[in-house]
Length: 369
Ligand code: NAD
Image 1 (cartoon, rainbow, N blue to C red):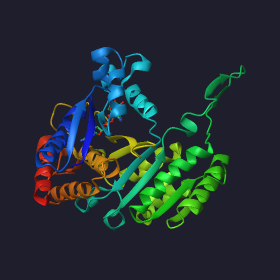
Image 2 (cartoon, protein in one colour):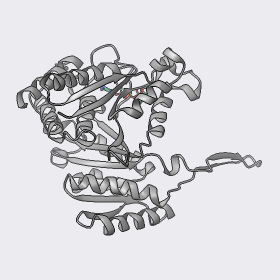
Image 3 (cartoon, rainbow, N blue to C red):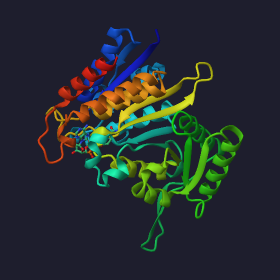
Image 4 (cartoon, rainbow, N blue to C red):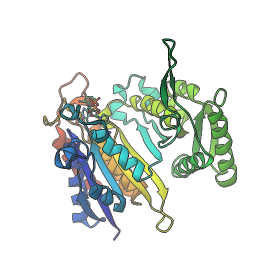
């Protein structure tokens, strides 16, 4: 039986509440002998700051380095708004991304049929939607130097950010996208702005070369990032995998996310380079939403984004894609039965809290097992 090390970093606010529902599913996997999960837990964000004055400790970083997959809840909240900048809750997540070398961010946008009316787009445009945005996460304009605001001395200031990409950064993110496309509908759309940006010209050139040399069997198209934004709201089903840089990916993944309704539904994965020996990638799985301090402790949090993030771990880190499919089917079934936490209930009252939603999904999973 396959055996894995899972690290839970539940974090703050609703993080521990939604993580608890994943922990029950993992315990069931263990009890049924489907896989053997060795689990450990650590602190991140405000809870880590309260315990030892850091947003994540070195000991917990070492656990993250050793894990087959890290499951991350959410960090932050008003209690820590005034802590020093370098130990603010988000610094924990940034350190994890940096030290684990997580350069590829995967954001699926899946529209469950039962929630198609929750989208701001028409049902026929979004129903059955299943696309994946692969965003470069560690380079580009968010990190490029120089990054300054200079006083020009004449009453004017100048702000500078630098968009910079090297060949290897584009090659490795392109490979992630092509590999994923092979497991899906075999199509990659590469989004950049080659018409006005040198990094766009290079991006286009490298993606084209990687495709020709290594992935000729995958369908590749190039699309200007602004056009991609338009196409996403016009007819998103034309896409399978979209690969793009850090800045465009930030924007396009949020556009795609909202095609499908609530923040409480959106999972994500961040992957690093494959290990030379084991071929396994460092990885972190987290819901897109934050710690939702406004509902923390009320039982109103939707655990689906966190549970679906665990589903992505099954698929992309643990080689249990069949179980990821079953988990997705369980989520879909529960939604089709009409179970709704407050965030996805629309104008109706909610008929499930966090633990009821988690329990219903586990029950459906047990039926298909
Ligand atoms: P948020 O995502 O926490 O909440 C936005 C809104 O969506 C809130 O009304 C919240 O109640 C609702 N919501 C979010 N997740 C939900 C869920 N699972 N079920 C039901 N409703 C849900 O964003 P915010 O309010 O801007 O930020 C709150 C805190 O979270 C801040 O401290 C922020 O810095 C932090 N944050 C952390 C992360 C992260 O850990 N990755 C991401 C975003 C924000």
